[in-house]
Amino acid sequence: ELMRERTPNNVEVLVRIASVLVEQGQNEKAQPLFDQCVALQPAFEPTYYYMGRMNERADKLKIASDNYRRALLLDPSHTDARFRFAKIVGASKKTSDVKEAIKHLSYIVTNIQNKKAKASDIAGLVFLERGQLYFRMKLFRKALADFEQAISLDPTNIDTLVRYGQVLITEDKLDEARVYLTEAIAKNERFYEAYFHLGRIFAMRKKTRAAQEYLEISLKGDTSKYPEVHKMLGLMYRDRGLKPLARRELKKYLLYVPKGYDKPEIEALLRQI
Image: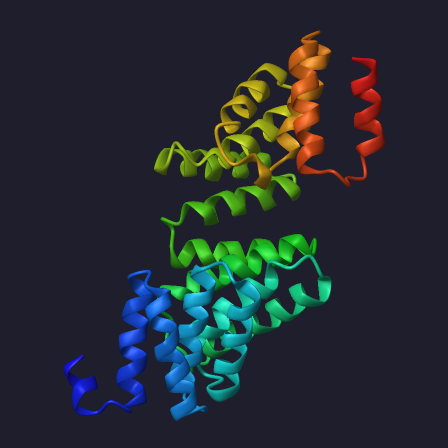
Protein backbone atom coordinates (compact mmCIF):
# COMPACT_ATOMS: atom_id res chain seq x y z
CA GLU A 1 0.00 0.00 0.00
CA LEU A 2 2.96 2.33 0.67
CA MET A 3 4.33 1.56 -2.79
CA ARG A 4 0.90 2.25 -4.25
CA GLU A 5 0.88 5.71 -2.64
CA ARG A 6 4.23 6.50 -4.23
CA THR A 7 3.46 4.96 -7.65
CA PRO A 8 -0.35 4.75 -8.00
CA ASN A 9 -0.20 3.47 -11.59
CA ASN A 10 2.44 0.80 -11.03
CA VAL A 11 0.75 -2.31 -12.46
CA GLU A 12 3.05 -4.76 -10.72
CA VAL A 13 2.23 -3.22 -7.33
CA LEU A 14 -1.51 -3.20 -8.08
CA VAL A 15 -1.45 -6.87 -9.08
CA ARG A 16 0.42 -7.81 -5.91
CA ILE A 17 -2.15 -6.02 -3.78
CA ALA A 18 -5.00 -7.65 -5.70
CA SER A 19 -3.44 -11.11 -5.34
CA VAL A 20 -3.25 -10.66 -1.55
CA LEU A 21 -6.89 -9.60 -1.48
CA VAL A 22 -7.79 -12.74 -3.46
CA GLU A 23 -5.93 -14.87 -0.89
CA GLN A 24 -7.98 -13.15 1.82
CA GLY A 25 -11.22 -13.86 -0.07
CA GLN A 26 -11.87 -10.18 -0.78
CA ASN A 27 -12.68 -10.57 -4.47
CA GLU A 28 -14.95 -7.54 -4.51
CA LYS A 29 -11.95 -5.34 -3.60
CA ALA A 30 -9.54 -7.17 -5.91
CA GLN A 31 -11.65 -6.91 -9.08
CA PRO A 32 -11.44 -3.09 -9.46
CA LEU A 33 -7.66 -3.31 -9.11
CA PHE A 34 -7.50 -5.98 -11.83
CA ASP A 35 -9.69 -3.79 -14.05
CA GLN A 36 -7.33 -0.89 -13.44
CA CYS A 37 -4.34 -3.07 -14.38
CA VAL A 38 -5.96 -4.16 -17.64
CA ALA A 39 -6.70 -0.53 -18.51
CA LEU A 40 -3.15 0.60 -17.70
CA GLN A 41 -1.25 -2.32 -19.27
CA PRO A 42 -3.43 -4.81 -21.22
CA ALA A 43 -0.52 -7.17 -21.96
CA PHE A 44 0.68 -7.71 -18.35
CA GLU A 45 0.46 -11.49 -17.91
CA PRO A 46 0.27 -11.70 -14.05
CA THR A 47 -2.99 -9.73 -14.12
CA TYR A 48 -4.77 -12.50 -16.02
CA TYR A 49 -3.15 -15.28 -13.98
CA TYR A 50 -4.34 -13.86 -10.67
CA MET A 51 -7.75 -13.04 -12.14
CA GLY A 52 -7.90 -16.73 -13.06
CA ARG A 53 -7.04 -17.68 -9.48
CA MET A 54 -9.78 -15.39 -8.20
CA ASN A 55 -12.44 -16.71 -10.55
CA GLU A 56 -11.38 -20.32 -10.02
CA ARG A 57 -11.84 -19.91 -6.27
CA ALA A 58 -15.24 -18.35 -6.90
CA ASP A 59 -16.14 -21.39 -9.04
CA LYS A 60 -16.47 -19.19 -12.13
CA LEU A 61 -14.58 -21.76 -14.13
CA LYS A 62 -15.40 -20.57 -17.65
CA ILE A 63 -14.12 -17.07 -16.84
CA ALA A 64 -11.11 -18.54 -15.03
CA SER A 65 -10.18 -20.70 -18.03
CA ASP A 66 -10.40 -17.60 -20.27
CA ASN A 67 -8.11 -15.75 -17.84
CA TYR A 68 -5.56 -18.56 -17.84
CA ARG A 69 -5.72 -18.88 -21.62
CA ARG A 70 -4.96 -15.16 -21.97
CA ALA A 71 -2.08 -15.48 -19.48
CA LEU A 72 -0.61 -18.32 -21.55
CA LEU A 73 -0.86 -16.32 -24.75
CA LEU A 74 1.25 -13.64 -23.07
CA ASP A 75 3.64 -16.05 -21.33
CA PRO A 76 3.58 -19.68 -22.60
CA SER A 77 6.20 -20.65 -20.00
CA HIS A 78 3.86 -20.02 -17.04
CA THR A 79 3.64 -23.58 -15.71
CA ASP A 80 1.03 -23.04 -13.00
CA ALA A 81 -1.31 -21.15 -15.34
CA ARG A 82 -1.06 -24.01 -17.84
CA PHE A 83 -1.67 -26.62 -15.14
CA ARG A 84 -4.72 -24.82 -13.76
CA PHE A 85 -6.08 -24.27 -17.26
CA ALA A 86 -5.63 -27.98 -18.03
CA LYS A 87 -7.46 -28.99 -14.84
CA ILE A 88 -10.48 -26.85 -15.70
CA VAL A 89 -10.62 -27.95 -19.34
CA GLY A 90 -10.03 -31.60 -18.39
CA ALA A 91 -13.09 -31.59 -16.12
CA SER A 92 -15.28 -31.30 -19.21
CA LYS A 93 -17.18 -34.33 -20.50
CA LYS A 94 -16.13 -33.56 -24.07
CA THR A 95 -13.44 -35.83 -25.46
CA SER A 96 -11.93 -32.92 -27.37
CA ASP A 97 -11.51 -30.94 -24.13
CA VAL A 98 -9.92 -33.91 -22.36
CA LYS A 99 -7.47 -34.29 -25.25
CA GLU A 100 -6.64 -30.59 -25.07
CA ALA A 101 -6.00 -30.88 -21.33
CA ILE A 102 -3.70 -33.87 -21.90
CA LYS A 103 -1.80 -31.85 -24.51
CA HIS A 104 -1.19 -29.01 -22.03
CA LEU A 105 -0.12 -31.38 -19.26
CA SER A 106 2.22 -33.17 -21.66
CA TYR A 107 3.72 -29.78 -22.55
CA ILE A 108 4.53 -29.26 -18.86
CA VAL A 109 6.00 -32.77 -18.54
CA THR A 110 8.21 -32.20 -21.58
CA ASN A 111 9.45 -28.87 -20.20
CA ILE A 112 10.22 -30.44 -16.83
CA GLN A 113 12.11 -33.29 -18.50
CA ASN A 114 14.02 -30.78 -20.63
CA LYS A 115 14.60 -28.64 -17.53
CA LYS A 116 12.75 -25.71 -19.06
CA ALA A 117 10.38 -25.70 -16.08
CA LYS A 118 11.13 -26.28 -12.42
CA ALA A 119 10.43 -29.84 -11.26
CA SER A 120 8.75 -28.54 -8.11
CA ASP A 121 5.87 -29.98 -6.13
CA ILE A 122 3.62 -29.44 -9.12
CA ALA A 123 5.35 -32.23 -11.08
CA GLY A 124 3.65 -34.99 -9.08
CA LEU A 125 0.30 -33.27 -9.49
CA VAL A 126 0.82 -32.98 -13.25
CA PHE A 127 1.40 -36.72 -13.60
CA LEU A 128 -1.57 -37.42 -11.31
CA GLU A 129 -3.88 -35.17 -13.33
CA ARG A 130 -2.74 -36.55 -16.69
CA GLY A 131 -3.02 -40.11 -15.36
CA GLN A 132 -6.63 -39.48 -14.37
CA LEU A 133 -7.40 -38.13 -17.83
CA TYR A 134 -5.73 -41.14 -19.47
CA PHE A 135 -7.86 -43.34 -17.21
CA ARG A 136 -11.03 -41.58 -18.37
CA MET A 137 -9.92 -42.14 -21.97
CA LYS A 138 -9.40 -45.86 -21.10
CA LEU A 139 -5.69 -45.56 -21.86
CA PHE A 140 -4.90 -47.67 -18.81
CA ARG A 141 -1.22 -48.40 -19.48
CA LYS A 142 -0.47 -44.70 -19.89
CA ALA A 143 -2.48 -43.96 -16.75
CA LEU A 144 -0.52 -46.59 -14.85
CA ALA A 145 2.81 -45.11 -15.96
CA ASP A 146 1.74 -41.61 -14.89
CA PHE A 147 0.53 -42.77 -11.50
CA GLU A 148 3.84 -44.56 -10.94
CA GLN A 149 5.64 -41.30 -11.74
CA ALA A 150 3.34 -39.36 -9.43
CA ILE A 151 3.98 -41.77 -6.55
CA SER A 152 7.75 -41.63 -7.09
CA LEU A 153 7.62 -37.83 -6.95
CA ASP A 154 5.21 -37.60 -4.01
CA PRO A 155 4.68 -40.93 -2.17
CA THR A 156 2.60 -39.19 0.51
CA ASN A 157 -0.18 -38.06 -1.86
CA ILE A 158 -3.20 -40.15 -0.86
CA ASP A 159 -5.17 -39.32 -3.98
CA THR A 160 -2.33 -40.72 -6.10
CA LEU A 161 -2.30 -43.96 -4.10
CA VAL A 162 -6.04 -44.41 -4.62
CA ARG A 163 -5.91 -43.60 -8.35
CA TYR A 164 -3.02 -46.03 -8.76
CA GLY A 165 -5.00 -48.71 -6.94
CA GLN A 166 -7.99 -47.96 -9.16
CA VAL A 167 -6.08 -48.48 -12.40
CA LEU A 168 -4.40 -51.63 -10.99
CA ILE A 169 -7.89 -53.07 -10.46
CA THR A 170 -8.65 -52.37 -14.11
CA GLU A 171 -5.43 -54.21 -15.02
CA ASP A 172 -6.62 -57.13 -12.80
CA LYS A 173 -3.67 -56.66 -10.44
CA LEU A 174 -5.84 -57.00 -7.36
CA ASP A 175 -3.15 -57.84 -4.80
CA GLU A 176 -1.08 -54.80 -5.78
CA ALA A 177 -4.14 -52.61 -5.79
CA ARG A 178 -5.08 -53.74 -2.30
CA VAL A 179 -1.62 -52.77 -0.98
CA TYR A 180 -1.89 -49.19 -2.26
CA LEU A 181 -5.50 -48.74 -1.16
CA THR A 182 -4.72 -50.07 2.30
CA GLU A 183 -1.76 -47.70 2.50
CA ALA A 184 -4.05 -44.79 1.57
CA ILE A 185 -6.42 -45.68 4.40
CA ALA A 186 -3.50 -46.00 6.83
CA LYS A 187 -2.50 -42.44 5.93
CA ASN A 188 -6.08 -41.12 6.12
CA GLU A 189 -8.82 -43.41 7.39
CA ARG A 190 -11.43 -40.91 6.20
CA PHE A 191 -10.48 -41.18 2.54
CA TYR A 192 -13.65 -43.16 1.92
CA GLU A 193 -13.22 -43.75 -1.80
CA ALA A 194 -10.37 -46.14 -0.93
CA TYR A 195 -12.88 -48.31 0.97
CA PHE A 196 -15.08 -48.39 -2.14
CA HIS A 197 -12.26 -49.75 -4.31
CA LEU A 198 -11.31 -52.30 -1.63
CA GLY A 199 -14.97 -53.36 -1.64
CA ARG A 200 -14.73 -53.83 -5.40
CA ILE A 201 -11.71 -56.09 -4.96
CA PHE A 202 -13.52 -58.31 -2.45
CA ALA A 203 -16.61 -58.40 -4.68
CA MET A 204 -14.48 -59.50 -7.65
CA ARG A 205 -13.14 -62.31 -5.45
CA LYS A 206 -16.68 -63.34 -4.49
CA LYS A 207 -16.12 -62.37 -0.85
CA THR A 208 -19.50 -60.71 -0.53
CA ARG A 209 -19.60 -60.05 3.21
CA ALA A 210 -16.18 -58.38 3.23
CA ALA A 211 -17.12 -56.41 0.12
CA GLN A 212 -20.34 -55.22 1.75
CA GLU A 213 -18.46 -54.12 4.87
CA TYR A 214 -16.06 -51.92 2.90
CA LEU A 215 -18.76 -50.58 0.62
CA GLU A 216 -20.90 -49.56 3.58
CA ILE A 217 -17.98 -47.69 5.13
CA SER A 218 -17.47 -45.85 1.82
CA LEU A 219 -21.01 -44.44 2.11
CA LYS A 220 -19.62 -41.95 4.62
CA GLY A 221 -17.82 -40.18 1.77
CA ASP A 222 -18.98 -38.17 -1.23
CA THR A 223 -20.50 -41.02 -3.23
CA SER A 224 -21.27 -38.75 -6.17
CA LYS A 225 -17.61 -39.44 -7.08
CA TYR A 226 -18.18 -43.21 -7.05
CA PRO A 227 -21.96 -43.75 -7.47
CA GLU A 228 -21.51 -47.42 -8.41
CA VAL A 229 -21.31 -48.16 -4.69
CA HIS A 230 -25.09 -47.70 -4.46
CA LYS A 231 -25.73 -50.15 -7.28
CA MET A 232 -23.38 -52.74 -5.80
CA LEU A 233 -24.92 -52.48 -2.34
CA GLY A 234 -28.44 -52.45 -3.77
CA LEU A 235 -27.82 -55.76 -5.52
CA MET A 236 -26.19 -57.24 -2.42
CA TYR A 237 -29.12 -56.21 -0.24
CA ARG A 238 -31.56 -57.63 -2.80
CA ASP A 239 -29.76 -60.97 -2.77
CA ARG A 240 -29.99 -61.04 1.02
CA GLY A 241 -33.70 -60.20 0.96
CA LEU A 242 -33.20 -56.76 2.49
CA LYS A 243 -35.71 -55.09 0.22
CA PRO A 244 -36.03 -51.63 1.85
CA LEU A 245 -32.24 -51.21 1.85
CA ALA A 246 -32.01 -52.48 -1.72
CA ARG A 247 -34.62 -49.97 -2.90
CA ARG A 248 -32.88 -47.13 -1.07
CA GLU A 249 -29.50 -47.81 -2.64
CA LEU A 250 -30.77 -48.44 -6.16
CA LYS A 251 -32.78 -45.21 -6.06
CA LYS A 252 -29.67 -43.32 -4.94
CA TYR A 253 -27.75 -44.85 -7.83
CA LEU A 254 -30.34 -43.57 -10.32
CA LEU A 255 -30.22 -40.17 -8.63
CA TYR A 256 -26.48 -39.91 -9.31
CA VAL A 257 -26.54 -41.65 -12.71
CA PRO A 258 -29.91 -40.62 -14.21
CA LYS A 259 -28.85 -41.36 -17.80
CA GLY A 260 -26.78 -44.49 -17.23
CA TYR A 261 -26.74 -47.32 -19.76
CA ASP A 262 -28.24 -49.60 -17.07
CA LYS A 263 -31.16 -47.33 -16.16
CA PRO A 264 -33.85 -49.66 -17.67
CA GLU A 265 -32.34 -52.61 -15.80
CA ILE A 266 -32.30 -50.77 -12.45
CA GLU A 267 -35.85 -49.48 -12.93
CA ALA A 268 -37.02 -53.03 -13.69
CA LEU A 269 -35.32 -54.28 -10.51
CA LEU A 270 -37.02 -51.59 -8.45
CA ARG A 271 -40.41 -52.68 -9.77
CA GLN A 272 -39.67 -56.27 -8.83
CA ILE A 273 -38.46 -55.55 -5.28
